Image (cartoon, rainbow, N blue to C red):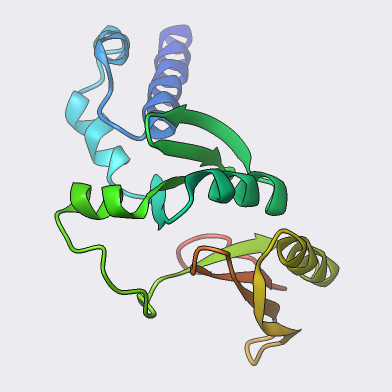
Length: 182
């Protein structure tokens, strides 16, 4: 009985990780695996909705954006599907999509380029890593909009605007997030 429970837990973890990594409803193979483990599909779908799986940015020049995010920021290209390029950022995927096409897909106007009230952050392990990452971004065409410095909550951060108008913070936090209560 203990062996069966351990195997069921291993399969549950495998199914959950595969579904999370795909970032969409599980395919038939995952459904069969879940059924084989006697997992209710509702539990898998519920787990999928608890985090952000993909952040998609609309860009004016897809090739230049792909170069910037891979070479400038060091994100590994995960896949290219039609007009969309996905980068593996170690948890949440970053996708770039032609701005006009993304607006059409979302059913909104692509006009306007003001502050969209959205920023992205890259958390790094050390203060020095903040400086290195900002310089790497600058070297790839980003504009530093706020030089790195100490922040009132005890961390160290700097900000850049990528060549496509998106604001990024590079930040070191001396008290990393540990859980929901951190």
